[in-house]
Length: 279
Image (cartoon, rainbow, N blue to C red; front, side, top):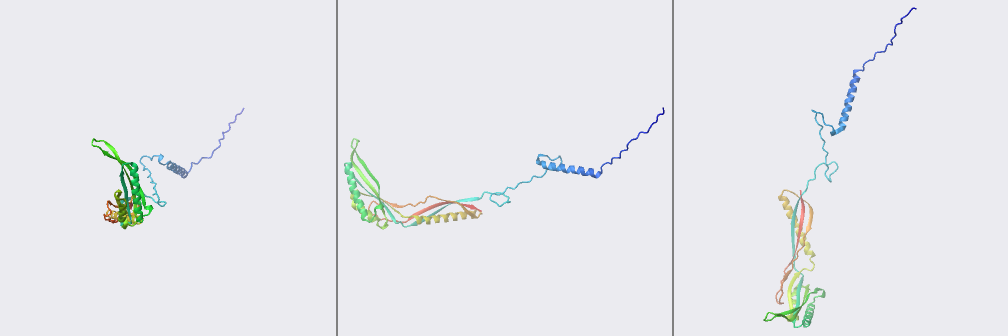
């Protein structure tokens, strides 16, 4: 038998060409860019590599309260100045206030009260005859107390009773104050008492207003001087407080009607405390 050998046939595959160098470089560059973006998004959580500079921190501006949008800065506390101003104003009084009354002593309480009532009625009648209105007459006090006498042995015992009553009388014609006092003592005799005379102003509103204006001027002038001496300018008025006004009456004792009365002037005093801003 004849054996034939046939040659082995191999399929030839086309050679595979290597990728172009430009494509390889483009892929590498794309990877580097993507890596940088990822690192940037990580922010401060990722530390900078050794030897490289850390990214600079960006400060966030703080707006000033009350400033326009976008304004940046701080709000420093304003310097202030506190001063006290005093103002005074004076005017002649138009009112005399008399403190008058009666006082009697009798063996019994009943007799003392009866005598006191008789003397008080005489006082009121004399005052009304001087054209003093009832609205200007007021009872201030009424009293009844025992009178004690001490014996030679040191023992105290009641020997009588003393009754008294005092009145406040407003005389709106200051020139007639002495005349009213004379009428009281003349009508009550030994039972009459004149304790004091006080001069005043019936309506102090206008006088207090003048004193207040003077107090404001005094405070402003003081503040202006302090600002100038300290190298500042005087700013707005921050606050103002007015203290209690004082109006002391011109009082004097009047033990006898022949004592001359000198009304003088009534003074109103106002004090204010002002706080100014310094610029």
